[in-house]
Image (cartoon, rainbow over all chains, first blue to last red; front, side):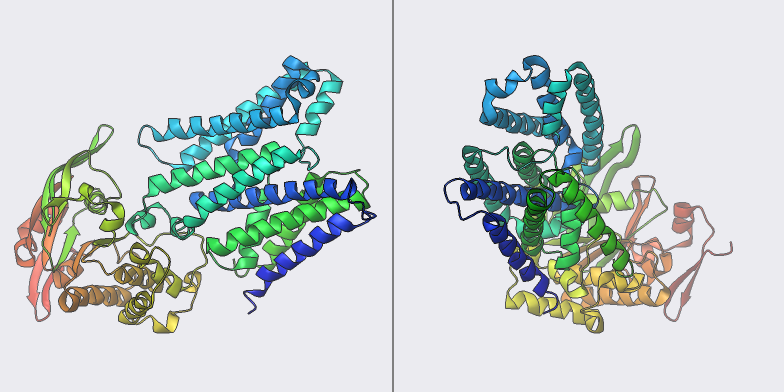
Length: 316
Length: 253
């Protein structure tokens, strides 16, 4: 009972938070305020599920609890694209491409990026997750340096546009994008659902998974592909979320107290969505847009994570 | 019967296995012995399909193992590497339940639960059934992993140094359990073992490897002789026939 209760409690909290978010000081304005808020809520749900799912499966595949897919260079690629767009097209890029154009371009570029690194790495029969990570980390640094270089070249006005892209926000998303992303995330999750028991076995490590009859190569590729799609979606939709995935995953493990992905993925999604809503509520109603969701999420998560580490030190 | 044919494996310029031919008869316990770096574990990993040979092939009952999908292979051959380290918080029962994965794909049936219980009882792990793995001693942990491998209900068990880091009591417990698996359940056990006396007391068959090749192979009496072991390890052996079987003394040459 004590093991199961937090799982449902989290869902309850998320629903309450969502209701508060939609109706608080809305004046029940169903023409403008509430549809706008529902769009933001949808962005949070899609982004939250994508971040939780991608981080937890990624940590399972690598057997490491302080990594997120962000470290594989996706967010760096996204920011470089934005920087290059601003450099070559100036602030007109927003007009030229439109929000949806930019979004589609980002998703495609990130998928192409992951396809390249996976393909290049798997071709010679090697299949080393740590090598993949090393390449991702080095590429992140190289690409970030390029981005910084570009940032030095643009004007202060353009720089502030770029600055906007480097922070997570829920206001960017358009209904068409949301629909597209929602469908994509749902499709990815459905594909992943069938593989959940296999994912549990993959957590035992390569050798044990193969001994238990799991086609390791094929499954790791499948999950890295799903992760790539999810990260591409969440980054294009919300912007970089950096280490939020680490917090979400670790808080999930502490609350779920089970290794089964059937539980952890659902709980993780709820935690991520709840965190987003809470942070956005604070930004809108308490801080009056003087701070960003990213800062709040990192502050709250970081604090809670520290408490968790100190409290569970005896029983990791 | 598992046979290996002309297996060759090299890492860069270093040859680890050089045209290895060996045969592991069905229904007995075969020990792989030899000095460090002889290629014992590499050979076992190839039989387990955790590593692909550079040349040559492994055959299960005469058929090349690469012809079987990995999922089918897991129903015939179970492998346990040296107690793997992962940061999952699992109970003994949850770990043993993984042994049923090749059959149930995660949805455990009543029959699966019966076999899980049997494997736990077989190694007398009942009192630890709901204990977490990270709370167990090294020996108990090793027993729990072995129980998972047993629950897989395969004809063949491949074990890589199952006695590593165990005290003599746990080592004897594990070897006796393996012996019973062969005698009472007709399973075939192939293990890499460093303690030559354990190999001599519990094996039906011994394959001795040296420098990437089979040095000699045969029954215990054929392999455990003064000349053969001296050649194998480069040590002086004093082998005596005691009331409880062969005893090799190499401690103080």
